[in-house]
Length: 249
Image 1 (cartoon, rainbow, N blue to C red):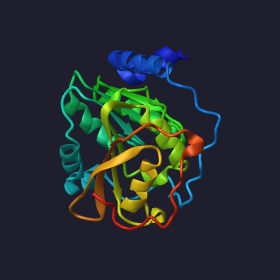
Image 2 (cartoon, rainbow, N blue to C red):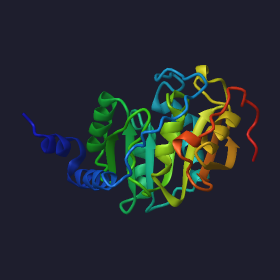
Image 3 (cartoon, rainbow, N blue to C red):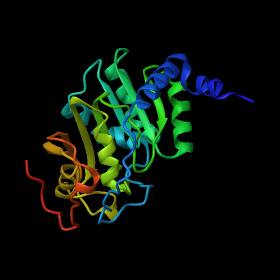
Image 4 (cartoon, rainbow, N blue to C red):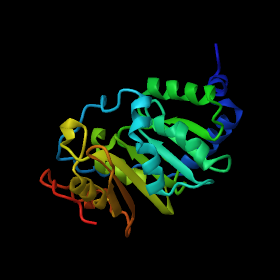
């Protein structure tokens, strides 16, 4: 029977294991989860499985990744996180862009999905990628570590957005950005209106920097940075479901 270390080596490779260990050691120094409760979402939550993109070839033809990476200004040497990474479409394409001096943390909340992605990372020899299991209300990011945190076509599936965002914010470097790619349509149809997104991130002190429509459909790109102190959980003011108009620039 494989030990935990042997299994990790099989899935991640030697350099991947070292990266994962470093991230886990950093995460151990993170602040404990507060006992205070977070407000409920107050809106619909989409089911976790979406058929918005059936294959990677379809996504490649749409050209979304190239547009998003350009808008996000991803550069060699950056540390980036791909939250809700799924099968790793963004993960495996980010890895060569950030290069050997950069790092990619791919996170998912489904153990089976995490394991399949780790196998893909090992198979493709991506030694600057670590794969990690998160929780629905806490992505479990090491603090102050990432230049960009990507939430790609997944935010509408987050069941506890204020807890999720409150914890996620700690993973940003001081000048880091949260990058959201989603569709401008109702949550039940696997999207979120930009104004609702802006309101929910603002509730934890993440301020909208820019929003851009992506060609070829109803998808959009939005980037956020910390703006002021992070509120205590009990001070978070939840958004109502009526925040459905266009987001202000």
